[in-house]
Amino acid sequence: MEKIIIGVSSSIAAYKTYELTRLFVKDGYDIHIVLTENALNLVSPLTFETLSGNPVYTQSFARERREMGHISLKENASLLLVAPATANIIGKFAGGIADDLLSTVFLSVACPVLIAPAMNPGMYSHPAVQENIAKLKKWGAAFVDPSSGVVACGDEGQGRLAEIEDIFKAAKDAVKK
Ligand SMILES: Cc1cc2nc3c(=O)[nH]c(=O)nc-3n(C[C@H](O)[C@H](O)[C@H](O)COP(=O)(O)O)c2cc1C
Image (cartoon, rainbow, N blue to C red; front, side):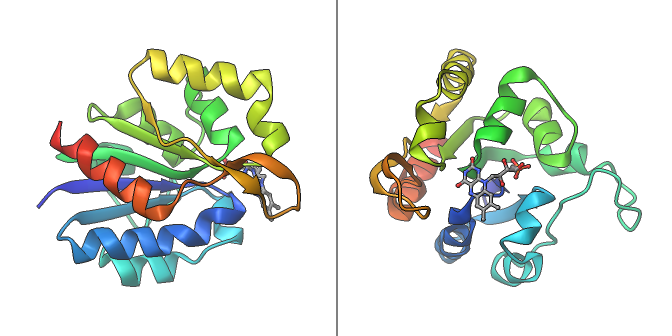
């Protein structure tokens, strides 16, 4: 059973990862979800635990889990998929910042990394975000680019989370390589 870690950061598109999780589980993948603290405002760990059948991780320093979350999580992982990825988490990855569980997991894993950004088009086109993405690509991370259209805030341009089916397919291809 291939193990995939799915990192969920606090984009308005985070609810779409419920469906992504369901697709992976239906296809026989072992899914381990890491939510950022901010994502807890938008999606429910209980829903992800129910869909994945595994505990959901958020905090690096949770007292109820004795093991070091970022170390045990990465064991035997075939892929780290971050969907949706905020401008913030992309910036933290590119800056080598490890101040929460998801950014620490990113620095710890040896498996392939696939990132699906989602943000306001103005944020996505900002040179800070584009340079961070270029840096992560140079380091070997793969991306499922956001699509163009009207985003949740009403602005138009590139920034919408890619279609769930496209992220699902890209993730399965990344695991095979
Ligand atoms: C309702 C709401 C929706 C948001 N959607 C996005 C988004 O789609 N993309 C993004 O980069 N930031 C978005 N943000 C801003 C991030 O939540 C914010 O930058 C946060 O600090 C990111 O934290 P995280 O990366 O640890 O999850 C949104 C904020 C709110 C309040």
